[in-house]
Length: 351
Ligand code: HEM
Image (cartoon, rainbow, N blue to C red):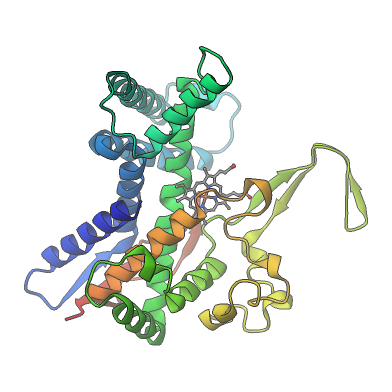
């Protein structure tokens, strides 16, 4: 995983450096940049050597997510999604192409596994190998997961893992631009731990200031704003009995901004809250749950934090940044909490 994070992050800063040319300062909208970064990372981790096909799938999935948002914004008319509108037709064609591409990658991998020359050091390989092992253990000739199940899992990883981590990095850059004293502290730490060398896992685990900053970013701008839970049996909660089937909304963003839990300075960016870790940050530790909670907690949380720490460290090593005059602060709940008008940064080299 770490080599994929390192390679994609280095590629990003190289591109930013190249596009700066001889100028001292350059304006970049980091929001699409981070979407590309996290999409590339997932493509590499999920598909390893089939990275090229993975990237194409990611582009289609990304367009599909944007189309789903457009669809959600259309006034609800029963049966509308079955009409041959331009959007519906495009979405259906995209879904078909994603399925075909994914099935193509899976078939190719199956063939390579049979021939004994598959490189299974990626998510697809791990899933396919454990699938074969499980069905062998169960003494079945049928695989536990069908090809459609594997396609579904791979699609879920794109949706769940790409945009969430991209918004985390985007809001981190916004807040570090608004609070240059924390940008300096983070850079100081990164340079102390890694110098200008490529970050390694041992060093990443020692980053305390960067971790505090990322937690505070996740508190103030949780990528997922709301979770739903359905009672599968009659449930008593706070003295009220709810019948089975009731859906509870867990508003992460409201609990992360509750002054009773965090104090009167709840809306201020204060990474020092997390100096003693998550448990000591609020009066009530379950109050911080950007990755959800319980048996369905995000399976990618360590992946996301490692990726964000790597990305941020490499950027801090190479650039200083501030908000561009063209930046408008407008967090907007789409599928995740996104910057409505992009996130324009002025970057200069950290020589
Ligand atoms: C900052 C980044 C991320 C945030 C804030 C985030 C947040 C969440 C949240 C809130 C949930 C629902 C948990 C619940 O219902 O209790 C979730 C589920 C999930 N996440 Fe993440 N996530 C992030 C990154 C990732 C990444 C990088 C991956 C994959 C590589 C990933 C894969 C998943 C999957 C597969 C689920 C569904 C788990 C299940 O239903 O059992 N997430 N995530």
